[in-house]
Amino acid sequence: MGCCSVTQRHSGTDQVGPEEMELLEIGNGGIWSLGETSHCVPLQNRSGHSADSSPQSPVSNRISDETLHEAVLWGQTREVLHSKIYNDLIDGWEGQAIHTYREIIWSSVAHLHNSHTQERSEIYLVLFSFHLLILAVDHAKRGFVYQGILPLSGMTIQEVKNSENVSNMFEITAPMVEPKMVICTSPTERRVWIDNIRDRVQKSMTQHMVPFQSVLSCLMPFDEKWKKNELEKYLLHNPIWNWEGTPIQHLGQIDYISIVAVTNSNQEENQTRLLVLFPSELVILSFDFQRANIIYEGRLPLTSIQAVEKSAVPGRLEFEITGHMMEPMLVSCFSSEDYENWLFRLQQPEQIFSAITEQPPPLVPKKQKS
Image 1 (cartoon, rainbow, N blue to C red):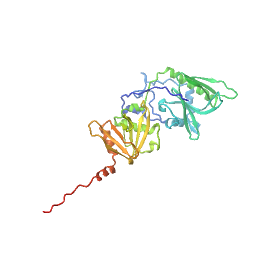
Image 2 (spheres, rainbow, N blue to C red):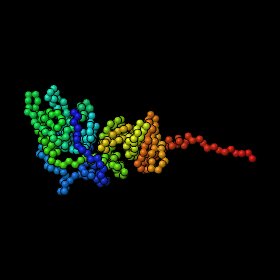
Image 3 (cartoon, one colour):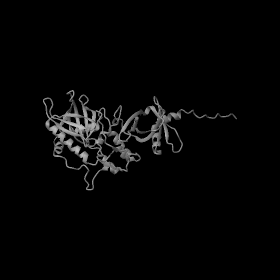
Image 4 (cartoon, rainbow, N blue to C red):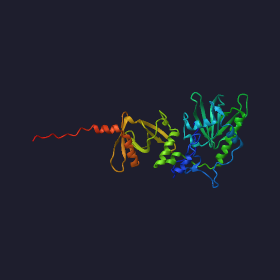
């Protein structure tokens, strides 16, 4: 559909400690509970109430209490589906990480109606605090395919009268987007959608939205042990863009992790990378431009690489990773601790032993006859 989020995100780094990170624990739905944040703490007014503390409508309360645990799709409840949306990779996903859109207000199966061709396509519609997400349904994989996400700001919604061919339909119009006709499963379902979207549209116009600060920006720079511990948790519980091969959760315990600068023969400038060492592989990751998402760059089996000290000049903490079927990669560390750790961990004992044994044995001087 080509409709993308326009929600801005904070890209700076604020002072934050382990106490504040308690707010980033993963909830039942798998979403980091950062919410509306500034300096990585919940936004509150002077009375101590959250910014979004306005009472919900009776419809919203009835939804939460009565239908959260009803089977909706594939025999799964909304609660399970919401967790799936937050934690599983969505085919064709574009834009920022899905957990940054905050809590899911409501969701259900519906159909998009094309008024020109009269065709219908099954969708799963998801209402966030300030966005409406449209997902196609893939029954074969029991998964979702990204179709688009619409900001609620400027959106209008109206009921469409029933006809002989179509009933329980409403129309969505938004700036720079073609009108969308949504068919609900029942009159009650249509009423729920209309009431909730209108309620959230109103809130989007009246509430002050604090720019989102991602979990990663709260942790950067990774210069303290507790930050690295939180980063390890983040990697194991959040999607990594373009990931390939064995899921990261199955690679074993993370032995070491740090940010480095990397250069190879194909690059003129240093590239910032996140190196993650597992028992049998070295995983290379990067960040998106706003440092809100992590991107997969590749992995190297430890048995096929070796680290060689490159520079002994003070202040230049560099080593080179070489191996079969790969270009040499120059790694620059930002601290002596990282430098020493990487050299120690990537220089395998058998490699060190081999380097020692390859040297010729010392010559024993012959005894001279008297």
